Amino acid sequence: GAGVSQSPSNKVTEKGKDVELRCDPISGHTALYWYRQSLGQGLEFLIYFQGNSAPDKSGLPSDRFSAERTGGSVSTLTIQRTQQEDSAVYLCASSYRTDNGYTFGSGTRLTVV
Amino acid sequence: LAKTTQPISMDSYEGQEVNITCSHNNIATNDYITWYQQFPSQGPRFIIQGYKTKVTNEVASLFIPADRKSSTLSLPRVSLSDTAVYYCLVGEKNYGQNFVFGPGTRLSVLP
Picture 1: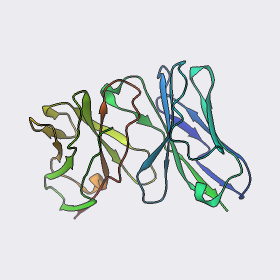
Picture 2: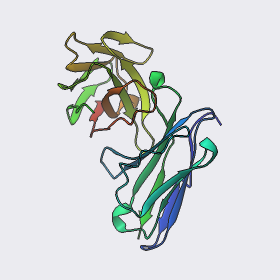
Picture 3: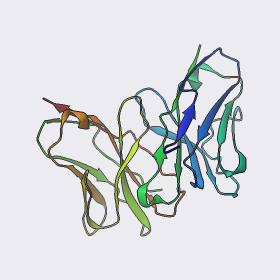
Picture 4: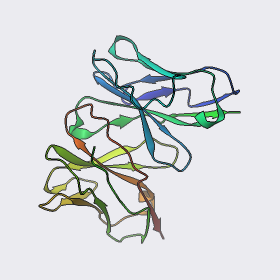
């Protein structure tokens, strides 16, 4: 597709359940990022993938959070044993070069009840 | 990563020019300055990027003084649809750098 696609767009889950969020980056973009945005707040960096290099996981808030990127394309962010404080919009972005910055998806709004 | 400071909010009227200034006193030699725009319920959108002096595109202009310790995003003749949050980021232009997004500037354009 022409843009970064994220699914689902909305997810409501019960506290303690696991969730998976998916990101389809722009074809050919080797870099992929996950950010989290709580209501009315700025973006919080979570994890960054670059080609075949080991991902930069320095932003993951706890070991309940993990992410994979298969075949250098699609990425899945997994949150285990969700907590209410995990409620936020999870944004994925991809880039080829920073000449034009990142391209963001529309995000997945996660609500933990 | 260089820390940035920008106003939390600004108001303007339709048709006016809006200038949003960002301070980045500890910017490094290899750092570029990038601005993003975010509308509610959407991901941020790249607006403009520069290293020094002035950069202009179809959306905005970016003014960077010689010491590069600040930068100003200029939006000409804003409309109601320019109401958004604007983020200033500073980091290396190596592709893949994980820029840090601060709280941004919430611009409200009034009729």
